[in-house]
Length: 295
Image: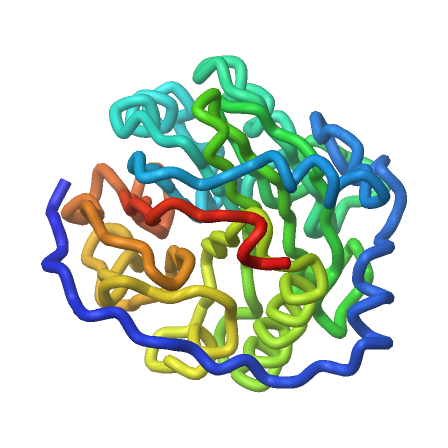
């Protein structure tokens, strides 16, 4: 892995999204589009979070657009992920059977949510979505559509998947796994980022928030600026994986975080056999977080 030099942190700006839209985000389609996800308990969540805190220890986040349609070598993917010992694995463009296989191989908890399936209602194994994997406690999972496109047959449909992850040391984060609109859909990307930010704001900042995934925003810093959190160092290029020159994948962490390490493999043809993206790994720590200070 090639370490990325540390850079100064910067703040972000969040654009306004009407509250009526945020309320509509919380309820999405039925749980038939999810797999392995513990049910959310929105009514009791605030009480549970009061007992959580984020401590000094380092957390490791790995995000990777897996391009599941390539029928990638899951044994090799698992070996790569295992070598990083991540606390959080956020995957995009991953098929349900792939997420299940990786979770079993890595002995991790997982939540998968449907993004789209052009073959629906047939060939359910080809449905692509987002997945959060973790070796820790995975609770309060949910997902929603953040794009204008809502048909589950359309690849332009975009979702955000989230969960609360708690370690045995009682450090905890709410993590959002996002895959924003691609190519020339500049306006759509920014609107999706604003909707995600509004959704996160409605949930509050206990526990602190991590936002990561494939933002498809090379040359568009305004997309990152619209999201909650900070990017401690400039994101390295991750696409195309054989010779990366586009900064599409990001990990945003809470303000006040300290970067321990940011890394991405050096691309070559062997990585291109797995996906058109390289994995991005970020290790960071956050000074003790006191939930009482946020009330």
